[in-house]
Length: 119
Length: 346
Picture (tube, chains in turn cyan, red):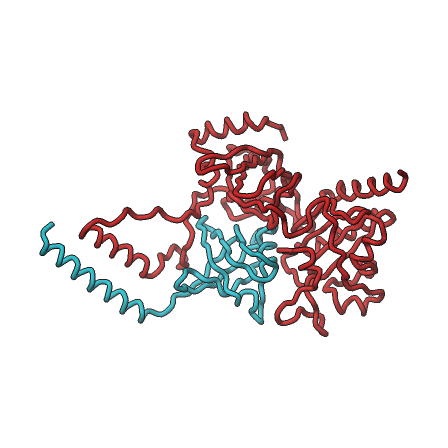
């Protein structure tokens, strides 16, 4: 590859990086929710969970870091132990999350009545 | 359930898997491994690759069907195993809890499961250390829901893995693998340890007990003794840490009923205690910052509910996390009673 070509590519690269930086700073934070069964709850204590993983109906796994808001929500606080009990009982949850620089962050977890009363 | 020799079972399993390394065998199933690292960039092509990676990292998350962001990886439709034990430590006869989830996102309760436990001994090596059946325990008052309980001997701390052989009626056998860590010492008391003499709250009237327990209706007999009192009493005792009033997933309430059922049967031979996990305010609600009663820290509870069976000598006989059935606890309690009787007569 000639020096001129390399220079052009580098120029394009700088332009694209600048464009990404600008659009990124203007983009609204993305939010969403996932419904499914808990298959992993990482916690060192009873109240605050550190991470959780949900398996959705299609079998996809979604892993989230867990905000302190989940346990401290005044309307519906959800402790790490409560999440573990959901996992053991097969009771589904809805995880509401927002994208943070470090990845998806669960900000609220809601109980969902199980659609399956049991075999 | 037929018992297969571990080495034979493992050999057959490896043959089915194409004889991959044990570590790969253990690590493979989670579907949550990070994506492979891209090759190191070289020259202008590398610069473009770097750009592509940057775009991928900075762009909007990939949205699967349903419009949610996926931080995990889609795994093949099939069984998923989840580990429900939170305090695995070195020692014999450790209670290992496995939840099996079917392709329909429904708990599996009809499988025969054998569990083989491996110590990861190097980057590509693991040794079979323990093997046995994982017995299905249906959760009390939750028909069709339950967990598989295996007993494992963990002889050293570090990285471990379990290979669960799952056979469901009318279906091809399958194997599930999970990696997990074993601690040198658990945060909760271990078998044979003297248990903490916690000065838990006691009461003799319903009004008194309602101030510190969320259980309704109040069963006063479970609050006559503190843990410290029960140790001094010189009888075996069971203590349940649970928050029945604030546990909406139907695990804590049944735990209390399990304790009461055992109390009704063994009341002359042992003491039975319930300890509320949260400190309650004047309205009977957890405090805003969800303070725990001191006994939670004294017993090192990383989760709740927990049921502990304690011998007449104040040493731990066995412990049960999460879903607890009368059938599973009974042998430990009867052992504690038998040892106490033997000690008295000796």
